[in-house]
Length: 449
Image (tube, rainbow, N blue to C red; front, side, top):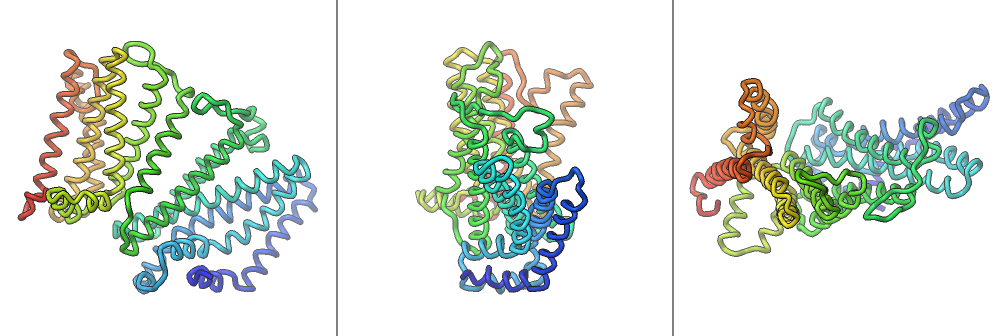
């Protein structure tokens, strides 16, 4: 058995705790039956499952690693012979094994109720959903804590609450997704559950499709925890898994084109252009998230520059960070979208997309530039403040002064002539990128940069 998981079993599943959890839950279920209230035992079990596995479980998952860091025991564990897979499994499911024990008791009541009133299929779907939402919530919290550990942040109670909140947010999204198709959901009395989901022009059974979607995202979260643990254990991740994730996200989101109006600037946007736009927007969001979360290491970038100068492309591929690959994917899909819009004679739309790509490049360069300044420990916060000024405060001031034509400096705007807006945006992007490359090349590293 996994040594880390076995250690947590001994720590978490003491006889006293098991007896207490069992007795308390049985008393609650018995009280729900004995009082004859309108609240059924199954409804109580659902509430308790969310409390024990999702709310309490995310807290334990969030502290699985950062608790060891605060107790000064993490360095000893990192030096052990345990691999990243063993450590991830042992931390994620070991630290929350007591929560899963309580959740299993609640699941028994939920599944029995669904089996008695709705049949075997409903019981099986309920079992799968509750297991998946628990894994999503806890793995998201663990992943958030691992990302913070990689950034070498302090781990105060407030920060641990933030890691837990990430898991709760992921569980909330999963809950609302499932409510779309679950006829026994809490919102079933307010609206009719959806029977089908339109995806890539196919009418798919909503419950099966959404459950498989949640299972897929749970799997990606587990893979994310594993790869983050590898980095924490000073191992190197290859680019293939992240490229697979990007391909999955692009294809998945682009399939929902029927959910959005096909409207462009100069007419109707066809399904291909809309799907490209959805994929490009997805990659852009991932790029912003990753450039914010990932550490910006000046030494790494210089080494990659040296590898590029020597033609060591395999070494560069192994060193690529997630935001770099996401940004490249955004470039590829966005350029394809621009070409398609020009082909369909949507020139204004193509210029707006080109400007948006330039502003993305500028923003990414701002994150890297501010993080690599000397003595800068809060470069990401400074970058967020800079973007707030560029996208909110400065445009509001310009609009208040009647300088609406200057808004093209801050975000994509229609312009006359058409090329003026993209030209301004790319001038900004190239300027900031030049400053960033110059900053990375200081102190004897200009050739590498």
